[in-house]
Length: 165
Image 1 (cartoon, rainbow, N blue to C red):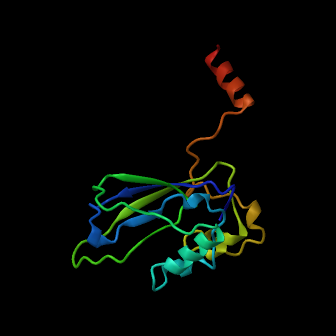
Image 2: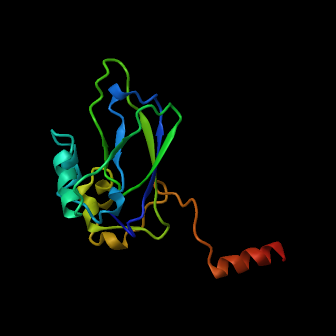
Image 3: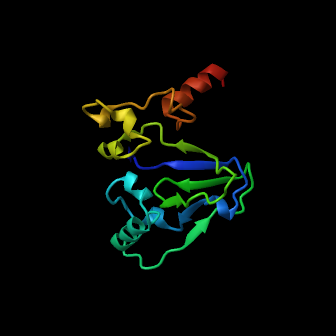
C-alpha cells in the first residue's frame, strides 16, 4: 500500500479487551513473510475469519506453523504497537451489550507514497480515486500530519544559526 512499506500502527484500546469482544490478534513474526498479500484486503474478512488467506500467505513464506498473539486482557487505555506488515485481525464481537472500540494511529515515513495496490484497501483506496499516477501523489497533510522528519544537514545548519551557536 505504501512505498517505502514501513508502517507502524499504535492501537489504543478504548474498552477493556475481554475475550468475548473478539479482540485483535497478531501472527507473531508475520511481518517478516515478505509481501504476503493475497487477493484483496476486503477478502480478509471472509467467513472463516481470514484463516484461508493467512494460511496461503504462510505457505508462500515457507512457514508451516505460526503463533497467534491476542490482546485479550488489555485494559482500556492500553496500547498495542505493530508493524503494518504483520498479519492481524479480530474475531466477531460475541458480547450482547459491550462494544469493542479502539483507535488506530498509523505512522509512515515522511517521504512515503501510495502504491498502485492501495486501491484494494477500503481504508486507503478513497485517497487515490481518480488519480492517474498514485506514486506521485503526496499524502494530504490534513489526514497525514508530519510528526517527525529526519534532520538534514541543511536543517541542522539552519537550527544552529538560529540558536547562534
